[in-house]
Image (tube, rainbow, N blue to C red; front, side, top):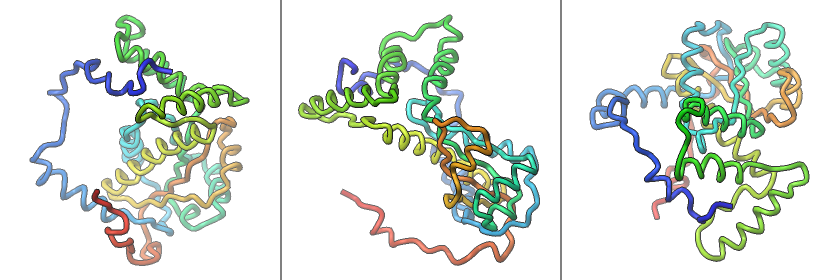
Length: 268
């Protein structure tokens, strides 16, 4: 376990980065970005019937790139986006989506896969990028975080011995103050990866809307058959399949209904 129960509080001094050249939100967004964002957000609906026309490749690739900008815990990005273009696999994938119209009429199909098993592979890739292939070694809190804390939190084993050890240590730590209480089970690792993949999925659907296209996230699918179709390892977890394209009028099954905001938004 890390030397402190609150390792994230030590990260502030680790970052010395000049972001002056990067785009960042400011007051101008109220008149430039916000109107378009509101339109894309409001226009995004779960469309069940599409016109079947494919999305131009350049637009689709741009939307997929946008998805990779979604926030990700420790920047580990434990997900993969499978844009299924092979016609034979598309037919089989639509069948594995139980033949629902959102899949059979879509212009494009994207399988969102959570990859909890890739945390270390992605960590090593990040380290190579951050250190310029080892020419600039990480120091201080950054080194502690990526070379010690992240492996400590994410490493697991078949019998769950490491998770059991974490459970015991966290229990003692929590008696003294606020403590990160997960992961302490294999299920926790799976939930973590699916949360990250869902962030990417939502970003993808908003990007599709901003590009003028519709989408539908499908969870009523045969995840095991899809995993086999894509040749994925056991550690991969299919989160959802996203269908995309242009809607047909009958593809919108009803008006948008949401619970009252007082049921969902709590100010304390």
